[in-house]
Image (cartoon, rainbow, N blue to C red; front, side, top):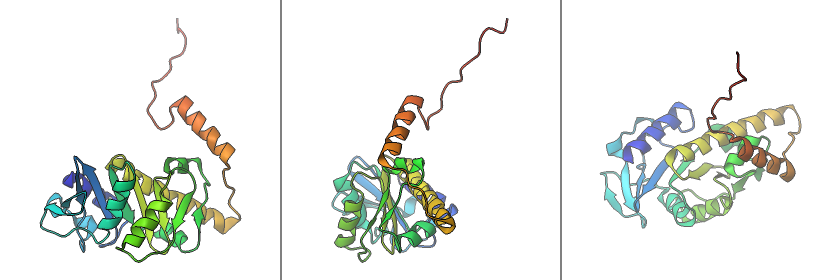
Length: 217
């Protein structure tokens, strides 16, 4: 689990979604949480650098203190059925968090996040107030923007949480570019429901077996 967290950090850094020491990542299994340490460069982390804490935040393994956003991660784990949590200062999403109250659903891929993405009111980093604000914004969603701060996503596993962060930054970029051209069209509830039905019917997002034609003979 510690190795997976370190690899996820390097993936996020390579994608430009975290820089330097900003952002933090965690994954949970069997009552323990592997989480990035405070003050470390995420793109350079190895498995041995990752801290391990229990559900109360007490250190169980690793020689470095957990991130200052430990409370945010613990809050998400306590409130939702999360297997992993990712917090970033992704540039476009963070920029939008400074001007929007909600990122509208401008593309159907945002349904992977639950639809329109709420912006949690600004709270000081590393505080219980930030954790509470973020968790409220995450209700019925897997992603939220943190006003004038960054992003938080979660998923059943680390791959899903990282993917949610990637989708969120992509969607934020689409909205930003569309808004530069005019007033972006937004998918309403009926259109979003139709996408869900089509995805379920067609198995969208999963490999499908090829269909063969008739007898060539």
